[in-house]
Length: 112
Length: 116
Image (tube, rainbow over all chains, first blue to last red):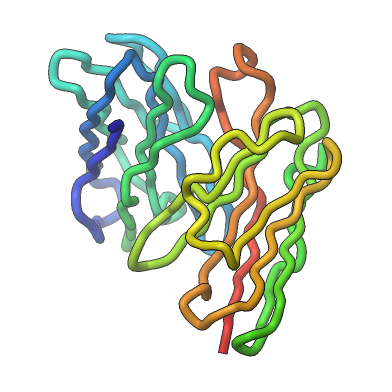
């Protein structure tokens, strides 16, 4: 079945550091890919998405590129802020399927 | 729009009691999802509905769990009887019709359930 694997957390960085959170997937079809973010005490919210190979999703300084050849969708940000501290989830939705398959989440802490 | 609304936000109950969690999806969304989040198991999809009809309940852990969606603006998740291992944060999410936002889901704030 479909699955998503994220890098192990937690991840702790200093403000203005470069961020990469790795995500790889396994899917039977041609999925859409997503990054969701969960701030403390809140529900998940969509951060960015990509629907086909080589698409780049971007939002709030975060970027991720849909790489079909490596089945990856790594999240990057050039300069993180304390306010980026949250749990980040990679997810996929296979073509024709409405439900999302989530990775296990990566907790990110940014220190000032 | 107010977003997905869940109630209560926090629930503390004793083992064996019935618990009912409530969700109001975003108006116009025709998909509704119930998730459970724990440290050990992460985020798990329990069940989802399309146009008020349950589509996939394969994630419902056992017969103690049941979910209903009597109309487009309301859904419940019931646990009877509750057990300490049901303690978790339960999220409701809704999604617009397929082809709208490419399956983006909008999550509520969650209900934190503690069963003692």
